[in-house]
Length: 164
Image (cartoon, rainbow, N blue to C red; front, side, top):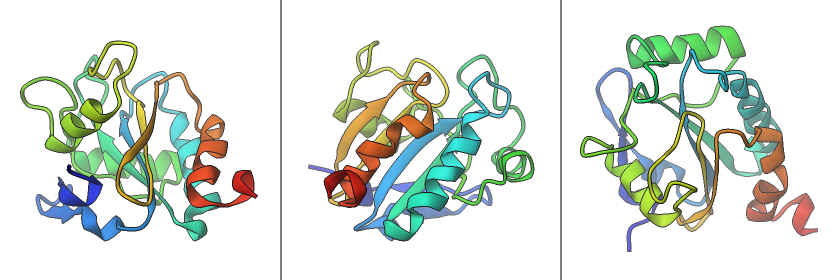
């Protein structure tokens, strides 16, 4: 059975990043967009990254242009937008598709592990997948779930405050 560490993901420069770099970490995978009503969640995602990064959380952003063309330009431009406008320091990968025949294998796997209200299909930007230290998907959160609402689930996976 695959885990997060079995995948690679495209960086904006065209190279592939092996996700085994995050082995043993708690990972929050998010499909992002720069021109979406949920784009301000980038600030909350960065806060989670800063607050829990020292305990082992890694946030991974994946721009996706499949929802209303809300991630225009290149992956590099998307990453620059996130950094400039929201101070994002967590990794922002190249643009990927998250649904359909062209979906990146990582997202096909994430969707198959944790379905949502629309079955496996991702409904919109800023769908979030929480992956435990063992590389398995723990929980899926919809676009409307604000990052700060993930804290208890993250803490439980990290074995910090909520578990204490």
